[in-house]
Image (tube, rainbow, N blue to C red; front, top):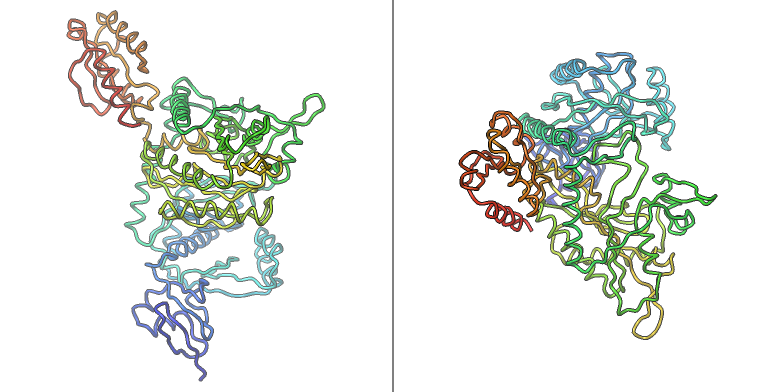
Length: 636
């Protein structure tokens, strides 16, 4: 019998019979490894355990301890869920079911929407199919065979997918009576699906197209063992408790209205105050770092958007209007106005760098299906800035922005990760400019000494970018800050400066945000703090409470004094029991409750009670203000 030779990750080699599989390779190393194998890698490509290994291949055995294991488990569990749905609802048509960061989902076309009770039935059926230990087998079919198979089954969505595939062959996976179109790889059998949960349901358009049919998207999650699943489900419950949409209503911060329009935020007094505090903080921090505040119009002529490349590359996300027979684009970004400010006069190298900062409100067309509270809206405000500098200043400016991000994230208590997003398929500018921009970002990142990832092909259409993803209290990742390096738009808008030799040169432009969209960042903050904002950020820092009506005159004096001293204060003088008023203030997550009884009236003091229930000693009003100011200073 002919033999093959394979190389293992440690550099050692094994000789196997021709036709040997990943399982055979694992068995040649040890029986324990063969038993633990769930997939393999052949020359870096993930494959099933039943895949035949070619001669001279580099082979790696994938077990539950491998980094790739969780995605394979989740992908296979999505197929398990689809099989359960088909057995319970035979008329259901299956579409696509990928693994995602938090688990998996599968979209189904069903006559009647799923109910919560249906989800419980699906999960029970999944457990039954998993315990049946059904073998999962891969089969390669010609395109014609696959079309005939799924056509016969009435799976019209699979037929559409196959018709769109350029390949002449496709792979399908079978487990029991269920068959699905898929690249794989998958687990060896359904018994490897040991810890899963069907979590929720939502609507989703077929292929994300609002003109296509609305499907039922069933979400689930899966883990290697039940302990990890239970820990995740606990985090999920905590995330529901912290949901910014729920807390936004309870704390009376903001609302949405169908009468106004989807994705458009209405800020209530406390929410608007929270925004104001955050924006004032932003202005102060930008002033400290040498930024000039600017403001641009909401609409600009369409010709400008055509010159910038937005019309060609970003048009589907923009809104347009017409004024006096002239076409205008509602701005989705602030960069054009900032370039106009730069062009308004002759610039010298001595003027640079120029840092233009704008809390600029922009509008972008987001599909209805992706709108999500404050986290994905159609109208929002960015803490947007554009730095125009010489190429020689670029490295220092990029590092300055990274330092700015680091300082601000520290104030809010966020850890963060960084990644470099490179040139996308749809882009403008020369190869040379893209290389210069990418190298500038890369060099600055390396100099920070912090780890970062490369995110191929996800840059802006005009330049590469550093994306900063913060981690919140539940260890979730949120994209907020970004730093984009752009040689292209200064070229398109003919931006110049006079260098030391009297010659015209082209500046470089850095597009950057620190918090990103203010709306999105506030949504993240609400969930990060579970609505219990630190004192410096709280829209209401204190509330004055009376024990009886007799204390109202003094309590009103206290309220007015605190307001005059700059404390964000409310009052509750209702004829209610003190315990009831305290509980309401605690539910509103107000940091301090100032209880006014007869003793406080006689001594002209206040007795602060913290929202965690701890009482502070009685103190004069100016002492309480000093206490608040000291706490505010401790944050920034």
